[in-house]
Image 1 (cartoon, rainbow, N blue to C red):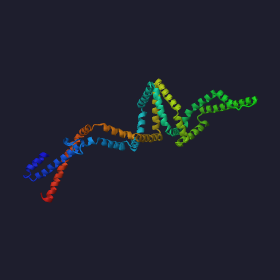
Image 2 (cartoon, helix red, strand yellow):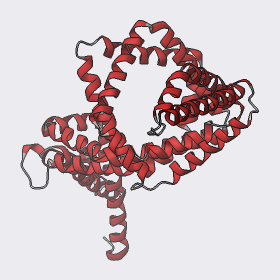
Image 3 (cartoon, rainbow, N blue to C red):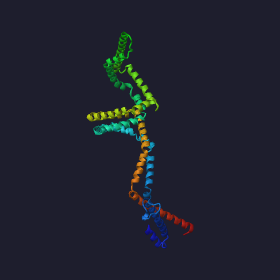
Image 4 (cartoon, rainbow, N blue to C red):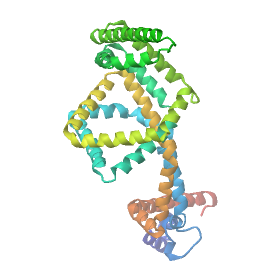
Length: 393
């Protein structure tokens, strides 16, 4: 551009085209220099001169970091964006389709098994289980878990599949009741009101014992019949009772008796100690039966994933729950994500950051300068043409 300007100045009187070249070159140099200054001023002081409002990235990197963090959170990590992306990309469906494949369910089950065994074999496993128990119980004590439990009861505890599971349990209950016949008769007999007459007292105890024996026989008989016949009326009564319980659990308010009971139980030291013991025992059992544990877990995961995929209502509910989870994560950890970006940018050296940014977009910056020259030159030609038209020179 400079050579064209020098040539145009030298020969502008020899041909009428040279003034146009001069106008283009003159404005082009100005445009190139202006763009060079503007681009360089973003990253450093032009020619090392500390001109005000230059080296902007170096001086304002913390402020840039804050605005970048806010931009990322608002446009990529907001609750609505995350929820919509989970629903849009059907992450639950894709995850379940991945989990259905045997090799993937095997990987997950083996990973879980290794983690459980690692905890069990840790020398400080008791302390770990205690901490996990306290944290889990405290979290659950403030979470309306009875609603989810009620929904689970309402969705699963009915129909042929539930009766096939309940039947053997009812049979075992009948056997247990028969084994404890003497204890029941003794306890009921002791509750009979004593009388001054020894004869009346004996008769009362005998009658009470006979009645309790009859009750045990009848109850055992009904339990045994229900265990052998899925169509027994006892199953229907049991399912009806469970359905009423499920409805009650799902409609209870936070200040209800169920909520108070949940908080009192989960916040008690006995419950937390029992959960810690259960976790510890589960870890020990997992360590002693690693192969069986991972095998059963693999089958259970694959079966659960396949059943959910084949049940549209269940899959839809999972999608909704996944969206809620994404929303909760954004609400709970959004500030932390934003703070992470701000702190990370604050740790960077301003000069190094500017140098790296300038080098990473260096080729594009050259095109900016070239475009500045061309645009400036065209504007120069336009202004020269306007001058000729208005003033004739």
